[in-house]
Length: 168
Image (cartoon, helix red, strand yellow):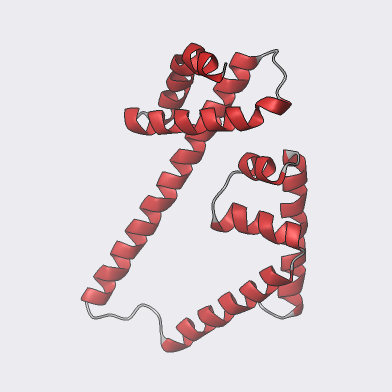
């Protein structure tokens, strides 16, 4: 049954993903991921507007892939720049700056662990694992609005705790 759905909509989903990514291999990967999302979401799917819904999933998946690639390139570029700075014999951060950064990271880790379990899972999945809100909603078996609310409440709580601890 699902194979028929794949066969029937593969080309339109590929076209939607390719329009965003402009790379055949990345578009193919995005379509595979999109079909996985479709498969996982089928139980809660309404069949009216199926083609549009599937195309939207393909486009969103392609946009997510594009963002991940952009972040990966930025990190690689930043690492290359840091290597060049070290090769030139310059030190970018003083020991004090390095210590402060480590202390801030430790504080933030402590605050993250103090979050309610549901909010902590969502924050880590969104910011650390770089999952989309839709993927997190599927994993948590809740609506996307619930994920948005959890992220909002977690950010608000983290901000207030950070300011109380004078972590600004």
